[in-house]
Image (cartoon, chains in turn brown, green, cyan, red):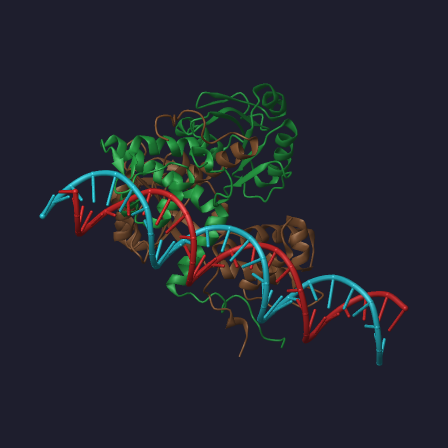
Length: 230
Length: 230
DNA sequence: CTCATATCGAGAAAGTTTTATCGAGAAAGT
DNA sequence: ACTTTCTCGATAAAACTTTCTCGATATGAG
Protein backbone atom coordinates (compact mmCIF):
# COMPACT_ATOMS: atom_id res chain seq x y z
CA UNK A 1 0.00 0.00 0.00
CA UNK A 2 2.20 2.78 -1.17
CA UNK A 3 0.75 6.18 -1.70
CA UNK A 4 1.27 9.79 -0.79
CA UNK A 5 1.55 8.91 2.87
CA UNK A 6 4.06 6.13 2.44
CA UNK A 7 6.69 8.77 3.00
CA UNK A 8 6.88 8.76 6.75
CA UNK A 9 7.90 12.06 8.18
CA UNK A 10 11.03 10.52 9.66
CA UNK A 11 14.68 10.04 8.97
CA UNK A 12 14.98 13.16 6.93
CA UNK A 13 18.63 14.15 6.68
CA UNK A 14 19.42 17.57 8.01
CA UNK A 15 21.29 18.21 4.79
CA UNK A 16 18.17 17.63 2.74
CA UNK A 17 16.17 20.01 4.89
CA UNK A 18 18.76 22.68 4.28
CA UNK A 19 18.73 22.15 0.53
CA UNK A 20 14.97 22.11 0.01
CA UNK A 21 14.67 25.90 0.47
CA UNK A 22 17.24 26.33 -2.28
CA UNK A 23 15.14 24.29 -4.66
CA UNK A 24 12.02 26.06 -3.46
CA UNK A 25 13.35 29.48 -4.33
CA UNK A 26 14.63 28.41 -7.67
CA UNK A 27 11.32 26.77 -8.48
CA UNK A 28 9.39 29.86 -7.53
CA UNK A 29 11.46 31.91 -9.94
CA UNK A 30 10.73 29.40 -12.68
CA UNK A 31 7.06 29.63 -11.83
CA UNK A 32 7.21 33.34 -12.57
CA UNK A 33 8.87 32.57 -15.87
CA UNK A 34 5.90 30.46 -16.85
CA UNK A 35 7.60 27.06 -16.81
CA UNK A 36 5.13 24.23 -16.28
CA UNK A 37 7.23 21.10 -15.85
CA UNK A 38 10.57 20.60 -14.20
CA UNK A 39 12.90 17.65 -13.75
CA UNK A 40 15.50 17.07 -11.06
CA UNK A 41 18.12 17.23 -13.77
CA UNK A 42 16.95 20.72 -14.72
CA UNK A 43 17.16 21.90 -11.16
CA UNK A 44 20.56 20.35 -10.68
CA UNK A 45 21.87 22.05 -13.79
CA UNK A 46 20.58 25.45 -12.74
CA UNK A 47 21.91 25.22 -9.22
CA UNK A 48 25.16 23.46 -10.00
CA UNK A 49 24.34 20.49 -7.81
CA UNK A 50 24.35 16.74 -8.26
CA UNK A 51 21.19 15.47 -10.02
CA UNK A 52 20.96 12.37 -7.87
CA UNK A 53 21.13 14.39 -4.72
CA UNK A 54 18.42 16.72 -5.94
CA UNK A 55 16.22 13.75 -6.76
CA UNK A 56 16.78 12.17 -3.36
CA UNK A 57 15.89 15.43 -1.63
CA UNK A 58 12.76 15.92 -3.73
CA UNK A 59 11.70 12.35 -3.07
CA UNK A 60 11.68 13.15 0.64
CA UNK A 61 8.68 15.36 0.11
CA UNK A 62 6.73 12.38 -1.15
CA UNK A 63 5.84 13.76 -4.53
CA UNK A 64 5.74 11.23 -7.38
CA UNK A 65 7.06 12.28 -10.74
CA UNK A 66 6.81 10.94 -14.23
CA UNK A 67 9.75 9.46 -16.09
CA UNK A 68 10.99 11.54 -18.97
CA UNK A 69 8.92 14.49 -17.77
CA UNK A 70 9.64 15.31 -14.18
CA UNK A 71 7.18 17.11 -11.95
CA UNK A 72 4.45 19.69 -12.56
CA UNK A 73 6.14 22.84 -11.28
CA UNK A 74 3.21 24.18 -9.32
CA UNK A 75 2.65 20.86 -7.61
CA UNK A 76 6.30 20.53 -6.68
CA UNK A 77 6.35 23.96 -5.09
CA UNK A 78 3.27 23.13 -3.06
CA UNK A 79 4.65 19.75 -2.02
CA UNK A 80 7.79 21.37 -0.69
CA UNK A 81 5.78 24.05 1.12
CA UNK A 82 3.59 21.40 2.60
CA UNK A 83 6.48 19.16 3.53
CA UNK A 84 8.32 21.95 5.32
CA UNK A 85 5.15 23.24 6.91
CA UNK A 86 5.51 26.61 5.24
CA UNK A 87 1.83 26.59 4.34
CA UNK A 88 0.77 26.18 7.97
CA UNK A 89 1.29 29.46 9.82
CA UNK A 90 3.02 29.33 13.19
CA UNK A 91 3.29 32.22 15.58
CA UNK A 92 6.54 33.19 17.23
CA UNK A 93 7.76 35.61 19.85
CA UNK A 94 11.04 37.48 19.78
CA UNK A 95 13.22 38.24 22.77
CA UNK A 96 15.80 40.97 22.33
CA UNK A 97 14.99 44.07 20.33
CA UNK A 98 18.51 45.12 19.46
CA UNK A 99 19.76 45.63 15.95
CA UNK A 100 19.55 41.96 15.05
CA UNK A 101 16.11 41.59 16.62
CA UNK A 102 14.90 44.61 14.71
CA UNK A 103 16.26 43.18 11.48
CA UNK A 104 14.41 39.93 12.14
CA UNK A 105 11.17 41.81 12.82
CA UNK A 106 11.63 43.41 9.41
CA UNK A 107 11.85 40.13 7.52
CA UNK A 108 8.43 40.24 5.89
CA UNK A 109 9.13 37.02 4.03
CA UNK A 110 8.94 35.01 7.22
CA UNK A 111 5.18 35.37 6.95
CA UNK A 112 5.00 33.63 3.63
CA UNK A 113 7.17 30.88 5.08
CA UNK A 114 4.77 30.13 7.85
CA UNK A 115 6.58 32.04 10.57
CA UNK A 116 4.80 34.99 12.14
CA UNK A 117 6.71 36.91 14.75
CA UNK A 118 3.75 38.44 16.52
CA UNK A 119 5.43 40.09 19.48
CA UNK A 120 8.77 41.41 20.66
CA UNK A 121 10.08 41.56 24.18
CA UNK A 122 13.05 43.18 25.85
CA UNK A 123 14.27 43.97 29.31
CA UNK A 124 15.72 47.36 28.46
CA UNK A 125 13.36 50.17 29.60
CA UNK A 126 14.58 52.34 26.74
CA UNK A 127 13.42 49.78 24.20
CA UNK A 128 10.11 48.93 25.84
CA UNK A 129 7.28 50.85 24.22
CA UNK A 130 9.13 51.43 20.99
CA UNK A 131 7.41 50.27 17.84
CA UNK A 132 9.59 48.23 15.52
CA UNK A 133 8.17 47.28 12.16
CA UNK A 134 4.68 47.57 13.54
CA UNK A 135 5.15 45.68 16.77
CA UNK A 136 5.48 47.31 20.15
CA UNK A 137 8.30 46.09 22.32
CA UNK A 138 6.92 44.73 25.58
CA UNK A 139 8.58 44.01 28.89
CA UNK A 140 10.18 40.61 28.96
CA UNK A 141 8.17 39.69 32.03
CA UNK A 142 5.02 39.79 29.93
CA UNK A 143 6.34 37.08 27.64
CA UNK A 144 5.10 33.99 29.50
CA UNK A 145 1.50 35.17 29.72
CA UNK A 146 1.56 36.25 26.12
CA UNK A 147 2.91 32.91 24.95
CA UNK A 148 0.30 31.04 26.91
CA UNK A 149 -2.57 33.13 25.62
CA UNK A 150 -1.46 33.05 22.01
CA UNK A 151 -0.47 29.39 22.14
CA UNK A 152 2.83 30.31 20.60
CA UNK A 153 5.24 27.46 20.02
CA UNK A 154 8.29 29.23 18.64
CA UNK A 155 10.67 31.56 20.45
CA UNK A 156 13.31 33.61 18.71
CA UNK A 157 16.26 34.68 20.81
CA UNK A 158 18.19 37.74 19.74
CA UNK A 159 19.48 38.76 23.12
CA UNK A 160 23.02 39.02 24.36
CA UNK A 161 24.85 35.80 25.04
CA UNK A 162 24.62 36.49 28.75
CA UNK A 163 20.84 36.66 28.73
CA UNK A 164 20.23 33.79 26.33
CA UNK A 165 19.95 30.94 28.80
CA UNK A 166 17.62 32.68 31.21
CA UNK A 167 15.40 33.88 28.39
CA UNK A 168 15.35 30.34 27.04
CA UNK A 169 14.29 29.00 30.40
CA UNK A 170 11.56 31.61 30.58
CA UNK A 171 10.28 30.65 27.16
CA UNK A 172 10.43 26.94 27.83
CA UNK A 173 8.59 27.24 31.09
CA UNK A 174 5.88 29.18 29.28
CA UNK A 175 5.37 26.35 26.83
CA UNK A 176 7.58 27.25 23.89
CA UNK A 177 8.49 24.10 21.96
CA UNK A 178 11.08 25.41 19.51
CA UNK A 179 13.87 27.90 20.05
CA UNK A 180 15.56 29.75 17.24
CA UNK A 181 18.70 31.03 18.87
CA UNK A 182 20.64 33.91 17.36
CA UNK A 183 22.63 34.67 20.50
CA UNK A 184 26.26 33.57 20.46
CA UNK A 185 25.75 31.16 23.31
CA UNK A 186 25.39 27.43 23.80
CA UNK A 187 22.02 27.10 25.47
CA UNK A 188 20.48 24.04 27.03
CA UNK A 189 16.92 22.98 26.44
CA UNK A 190 14.87 20.02 27.62
CA UNK A 191 14.61 17.00 25.37
CA UNK A 192 11.17 17.95 24.15
CA UNK A 193 12.20 21.37 22.88
CA UNK A 194 13.73 21.83 19.44
CA UNK A 195 16.79 24.03 19.30
CA UNK A 196 18.05 25.68 16.15
CA UNK A 197 21.23 27.63 16.56
CA UNK A 198 22.12 30.45 14.23
CA UNK A 199 25.48 31.26 15.67
CA UNK A 200 27.52 33.52 13.43
CA UNK A 201 30.74 32.46 15.06
CA UNK A 202 30.23 28.89 13.93
CA UNK A 203 30.19 30.17 10.40
CA UNK A 204 33.02 32.54 11.03
CA UNK A 205 35.18 29.71 12.27
CA UNK A 206 34.49 27.67 9.20
CA UNK A 207 35.05 30.60 6.89
CA UNK A 208 38.29 31.78 8.37
CA UNK A 209 39.70 28.29 8.69
CA UNK A 210 38.94 27.46 5.08
CA UNK A 211 40.27 30.77 3.86
CA UNK A 212 43.58 30.29 5.62
CA UNK A 213 43.82 26.70 4.46
CA UNK A 214 43.31 27.80 0.91
CA UNK A 215 45.71 30.70 1.21
CA UNK A 216 48.33 28.43 2.68
CA UNK A 217 48.64 29.88 6.15
CA UNK A 218 50.28 27.45 8.54
CA UNK A 219 47.93 26.89 11.44
CA UNK A 220 50.61 26.41 13.97
CA UNK A 221 53.85 28.23 13.66
CA UNK A 222 53.18 31.61 15.16
CA UNK A 223 51.99 32.89 18.43
CA UNK A 224 52.66 29.67 20.24
CA UNK A 225 56.01 28.27 21.16
CA UNK A 226 56.67 24.57 21.26
CA UNK A 227 60.23 24.66 22.50
CA UNK A 228 61.14 23.04 25.77
CA UNK A 229 59.20 19.83 25.47
CA UNK A 230 60.30 17.30 22.94
CA UNK B 1 58.50 12.63 13.40
CA UNK B 2 55.41 13.68 15.14
CA UNK B 3 55.13 17.10 16.60
CA UNK B 4 52.97 20.16 16.63
CA UNK B 5 52.89 20.25 12.85
CA UNK B 6 52.00 16.65 12.40
CA UNK B 7 48.43 17.84 12.40
CA UNK B 8 47.99 18.69 8.76
CA UNK B 9 45.48 21.42 8.15
CA UNK B 10 43.33 19.06 6.13
CA UNK B 11 40.31 16.84 6.42
CA UNK B 12 38.77 18.81 9.20
CA UNK B 13 35.10 17.93 9.48
CA UNK B 14 32.75 20.83 9.03
CA UNK B 15 31.00 19.70 12.19
CA UNK B 16 34.18 20.08 14.22
CA UNK B 17 34.73 23.56 12.88
CA UNK B 18 31.26 24.51 14.00
CA UNK B 19 31.76 23.09 17.47
CA UNK B 20 35.14 24.63 18.22
CA UNK B 21 33.64 28.09 18.76
CA UNK B 22 31.34 26.58 21.36
CA UNK B 23 34.29 25.19 23.26
CA UNK B 24 36.16 28.43 22.77
CA UNK B 25 33.46 30.50 24.40
CA UNK B 26 33.04 28.13 27.26
CA UNK B 27 36.78 28.05 27.83
CA UNK B 28 37.02 31.81 27.84
CA UNK B 29 34.39 31.97 30.54
CA UNK B 30 36.37 29.46 32.58
CA UNK B 31 39.47 31.55 32.08
CA UNK B 32 37.69 34.46 33.73
CA UNK B 33 36.77 32.17 36.61
CA UNK B 34 40.42 31.49 37.20
CA UNK B 35 40.49 27.85 36.17
CA UNK B 36 43.95 26.70 35.09
CA UNK B 37 43.49 23.20 33.73
CA UNK B 38 40.66 21.67 31.77
CA UNK B 39 39.91 18.21 30.44
CA UNK B 40 37.73 17.22 27.53
CA UNK B 41 35.51 15.44 30.00
CA UNK B 42 35.00 18.70 31.91
CA UNK B 43 34.03 20.54 28.77
CA UNK B 44 31.69 17.80 27.69
CA UNK B 45 29.98 17.82 31.05
CA UNK B 46 29.48 21.57 31.01
CA UNK B 47 28.16 21.68 27.46
CA UNK B 48 26.16 18.50 27.57
CA UNK B 49 28.09 16.93 24.72
CA UNK B 50 29.81 13.61 24.16
CA UNK B 51 33.30 13.53 25.74
CA UNK B 52 34.78 11.55 22.86
CA UNK B 53 33.52 14.04 20.35
CA UNK B 54 34.93 16.93 22.31
CA UNK B 55 38.30 15.20 22.46
CA UNK B 56 38.28 14.51 18.74
CA UNK B 57 37.50 18.12 17.98
CA UNK B 58 40.17 19.42 20.35
CA UNK B 59 42.70 17.05 18.85
CA UNK B 60 42.11 18.70 15.49
CA UNK B 61 43.80 21.83 16.77
CA UNK B 62 46.98 19.85 17.32
CA UNK B 63 47.34 20.55 21.01
CA UNK B 64 48.79 17.71 23.08
CA UNK B 65 47.37 17.11 26.51
CA UNK B 66 48.46 15.20 29.55
CA UNK B 67 46.69 12.10 30.79
CA UNK B 68 44.77 12.55 33.99
CA UNK B 69 45.18 16.33 33.72
CA UNK B 70 43.91 17.61 30.43
CA UNK B 71 45.12 20.85 28.92
CA UNK B 72 46.38 24.13 30.36
CA UNK B 73 43.35 26.35 29.84
CA UNK B 74 45.20 29.34 28.48
CA UNK B 75 47.10 27.22 26.01
CA UNK B 76 43.97 25.52 24.79
CA UNK B 77 42.24 28.82 24.15
CA UNK B 78 45.23 30.05 22.17
CA UNK B 79 45.49 26.81 20.20
CA UNK B 80 41.86 27.11 19.14
CA UNK B 81 42.30 30.76 18.24
CA UNK B 82 45.36 29.91 16.26
CA UNK B 83 43.79 26.93 14.60
CA UNK B 84 40.76 28.91 13.47
CA UNK B 85 42.86 31.86 12.49
CA UNK B 86 41.10 34.14 14.93
CA UNK B 87 44.42 35.59 16.04
CA UNK B 88 45.32 36.67 12.52
CA UNK B 89 43.23 39.68 11.54
CA UNK B 90 41.54 39.66 8.15
CA UNK B 91 39.82 42.61 6.58
CA UNK B 92 36.38 42.34 5.03
CA UNK B 93 34.01 44.52 3.05
CA UNK B 94 30.26 44.57 3.39
CA UNK B 95 27.77 44.99 0.58
CA UNK B 96 24.26 46.01 1.54
CA UNK B 97 23.67 48.50 4.32
CA UNK B 98 20.13 47.54 5.20
CA UNK B 99 19.01 46.47 8.63
CA UNK B 100 20.96 43.23 8.56
CA UNK B 101 24.07 44.90 7.17
CA UNK B 102 23.86 47.53 9.89
CA UNK B 103 23.55 44.85 12.52
CA UNK B 104 26.63 43.13 11.17
CA UNK B 105 28.58 46.39 11.22
CA UNK B 106 27.68 46.67 14.87
CA UNK B 107 29.11 43.30 15.85
CA UNK B 108 32.17 44.53 17.66
CA UNK B 109 33.16 41.01 18.59
CA UNK B 110 34.06 40.21 15.00
CA UNK B 111 37.24 42.17 15.59
CA UNK B 112 38.42 39.90 18.35
CA UNK B 113 37.68 36.95 16.11
CA UNK B 114 39.98 38.13 13.39
CA UNK B 115 37.32 39.63 11.16
CA UNK B 116 37.43 43.36 10.52
CA UNK B 117 34.67 44.81 8.36
CA UNK B 118 36.49 47.91 7.25
CA UNK B 119 34.04 49.29 4.73
CA UNK B 120 30.39 49.19 3.72
CA UNK B 121 28.94 49.62 0.27
CA UNK B 122 25.45 50.06 -1.11
CA UNK B 123 23.78 51.04 -4.32
CA UNK B 124 20.99 53.05 -2.71
CA UNK B 125 21.71 56.81 -2.92
CA UNK B 126 19.81 57.34 0.32
CA UNK B 127 22.18 55.08 2.18
CA UNK B 128 25.40 56.28 0.60
CA UNK B 129 27.13 58.81 2.83
CA UNK B 130 25.42 57.60 5.99
CA UNK B 131 27.67 56.61 8.82
CA UNK B 132 26.83 53.27 10.40
CA UNK B 133 28.75 52.24 13.48
CA UNK B 134 31.62 54.46 12.43
CA UNK B 135 31.87 53.47 8.82
CA UNK B 136 30.60 55.59 5.95
CA UNK B 137 28.54 53.79 3.35
CA UNK B 138 30.18 54.11 -0.04
CA UNK B 139 28.81 53.61 -3.53
CA UNK B 140 28.97 50.00 -4.59
CA UNK B 141 30.99 50.93 -7.65
CA UNK B 142 33.88 51.93 -5.39
CA UNK B 143 34.10 48.43 -3.97
CA UNK B 144 36.49 46.86 -6.48
CA UNK B 145 39.14 49.57 -6.15
CA UNK B 146 38.81 49.53 -2.40
CA UNK B 147 39.23 45.78 -2.24
CA UNK B 148 42.29 45.89 -4.43
CA UNK B 149 43.94 48.66 -2.46
CA UNK B 150 43.22 47.15 0.93
CA UNK B 151 44.04 43.61 -0.22
CA UNK B 152 40.78 42.49 1.28
CA UNK B 153 40.00 38.81 0.94
CA UNK B 154 36.56 38.54 2.53
CA UNK B 155 33.28 39.90 1.23
CA UNK B 156 30.10 39.97 3.27
CA UNK B 157 26.86 40.05 1.33
CA UNK B 158 23.79 41.48 3.05
CA UNK B 159 21.96 42.64 -0.04
CA UNK B 160 18.63 41.54 -1.40
CA UNK B 161 18.47 38.14 -3.01
CA UNK B 162 18.11 39.77 -6.40
CA UNK B 163 21.39 41.66 -6.09
CA UNK B 164 23.40 38.89 -4.47
CA UNK B 165 24.81 37.22 -7.57
CA UNK B 166 25.91 40.41 -9.30
CA UNK B 167 27.50 41.72 -6.12
CA UNK B 168 29.27 38.40 -5.73
CA UNK B 169 30.62 38.62 -9.25
CA UNK B 170 31.81 42.14 -8.56
CA UNK B 171 33.61 41.03 -5.44
CA UNK B 172 35.15 37.97 -7.04
CA UNK B 173 36.43 39.93 -10.01
CA UNK B 174 38.04 42.36 -7.58
CA UNK B 175 39.96 39.56 -5.91
CA UNK B 176 37.77 38.54 -3.00
CA UNK B 177 38.55 34.96 -2.01
CA UNK B 178 35.81 34.24 0.51
CA UNK B 179 32.15 35.22 0.46
CA UNK B 180 29.99 35.28 3.55
CA UNK B 181 26.51 35.33 2.10
CA UNK B 182 23.54 36.48 4.18
CA UNK B 183 21.25 37.02 1.22
CA UNK B 184 18.54 34.40 0.72
CA UNK B 185 19.93 33.32 -2.61
CA UNK B 186 21.94 30.45 -4.01
CA UNK B 187 24.95 32.16 -5.48
CA UNK B 188 27.63 30.67 -7.69
CA UNK B 189 31.32 31.28 -7.14
CA UNK B 190 34.42 30.02 -8.93
CA UNK B 191 36.19 27.01 -7.52
CA UNK B 192 38.89 29.09 -5.87
CA UNK B 193 36.46 31.17 -3.84
CA UNK B 194 35.11 29.97 -0.51
CA UNK B 195 31.40 30.39 0.00
CA UNK B 196 29.74 30.41 3.37
CA UNK B 197 25.98 30.69 3.29
CA UNK B 198 24.04 32.07 6.20
CA UNK B 199 20.62 31.56 4.80
CA UNK B 200 17.92 31.95 7.43
CA UNK B 201 15.45 30.00 5.37
CA UNK B 202 17.62 26.91 5.56
CA UNK B 203 17.29 27.10 9.31
CA UNK B 204 13.66 27.97 9.14
CA UNK B 205 12.97 24.90 7.05
CA UNK B 206 14.74 22.69 9.52
CA UNK B 207 13.02 24.31 12.47
CA UNK B 208 9.51 24.21 11.14
CA UNK B 209 9.85 20.67 9.83
CA UNK B 210 11.13 19.38 13.14
CA UNK B 211 8.51 21.27 15.09
CA UNK B 212 5.70 19.80 13.05
CA UNK B 213 7.20 16.34 13.22
CA UNK B 214 7.37 16.59 16.96
CA UNK B 215 3.90 18.02 17.27
CA UNK B 216 2.51 15.27 15.10
CA UNK B 217 1.37 17.23 12.08
CA UNK B 218 0.91 15.04 9.05
CA UNK B 219 3.06 16.40 6.27
CA UNK B 220 0.79 15.40 3.48
CA UNK B 221 -2.91 15.33 4.00
CA UNK B 222 -3.97 18.88 3.47
CA UNK B 223 -3.75 21.37 0.69
CA UNK B 224 -2.97 18.85 -1.99
CA UNK B 225 -5.35 16.41 -3.57
CA UNK B 226 -4.20 13.10 -4.93
CA UNK B 227 -7.39 11.98 -6.56
CA UNK B 228 -7.65 11.67 -10.31
CA UNK B 229 -4.47 9.86 -11.23
CA UNK B 230 -3.44 6.32 -10.42
C1' DC C 1 3.73 0.85 -34.27
C1' DT C 2 8.45 0.36 -32.84
C1' DC C 3 12.63 2.22 -31.16
C1' DA C 4 15.62 5.49 -28.98
C1' DT C 5 16.13 8.57 -25.19
C1' DA C 6 15.55 10.92 -20.96
C1' DT C 7 14.09 10.67 -16.22
C1' DC C 8 12.20 8.66 -12.16
C1' DG C 9 12.71 5.49 -8.27
C1' DA C 10 15.16 2.14 -5.77
C1' DG C 11 19.00 -0.32 -4.16
C1' DA C 12 24.09 -0.75 -3.72
C1' DA C 13 28.53 1.19 -2.95
C1' DA C 14 31.64 4.57 -1.34
C1' DG C 15 32.78 8.05 1.63
C1' DT C 16 32.06 10.83 6.11
C1' DT C 17 31.06 11.56 10.58
C1' DT C 18 29.91 10.01 15.02
C1' DT C 19 30.23 6.84 18.75
C1' DA C 20 32.45 3.03 21.22
C1' DT C 21 36.54 0.58 22.85
C1' DC C 22 41.22 -0.05 24.48
C1' DG C 23 46.04 0.69 25.87
C1' DA C 24 49.38 4.01 27.88
C1' DG C 25 50.68 7.30 31.09
C1' DA C 26 50.21 10.79 34.82
C1' DA C 27 48.51 12.05 39.36
C1' DA C 28 46.73 10.84 43.99
C1' DG C 29 45.97 7.93 47.73
C1' DT C 30 47.60 3.88 50.47
C1' DA D 1 56.94 2.48 46.20
C1' DC D 2 52.67 0.42 44.68
C1' DT D 3 48.02 0.53 43.28
C1' DT D 4 44.04 2.84 41.72
C1' DT D 5 41.82 6.05 38.95
C1' DC D 6 41.30 9.24 35.46
C1' DT D 7 42.19 11.11 30.86
C1' DC D 8 44.55 11.28 26.57
C1' DG D 9 45.31 9.37 21.98
C1' DA D 10 44.44 6.00 18.64
C1' DT D 11 41.90 2.39 16.51
C1' DA D 12 37.58 0.08 15.44
C1' DA D 13 32.76 -0.13 14.79
C1' DA D 14 28.39 1.95 13.77
C1' DA D 15 25.55 5.31 11.75
C1' DC D 16 24.71 8.46 8.44
C1' DT D 17 25.21 10.88 3.93
C1' DT D 18 26.44 11.13 -0.66
C1' DT D 19 27.32 9.14 -4.99
C1' DC D 20 26.88 5.48 -8.32
C1' DT D 21 24.25 2.06 -10.94
C1' DC D 22 20.33 -0.09 -12.93
C1' DG D 23 15.64 -1.29 -14.34
C1' DA D 24 11.05 0.71 -15.41
C1' DT D 25 8.38 3.93 -17.88
C1' DA D 26 6.70 7.86 -20.50
C1' DT D 27 7.56 10.74 -24.50
C1' DG D 28 8.90 11.79 -29.16
C1' DA D 29 10.98 10.37 -33.58
C1' DG D 30 11.13 7.33 -37.36
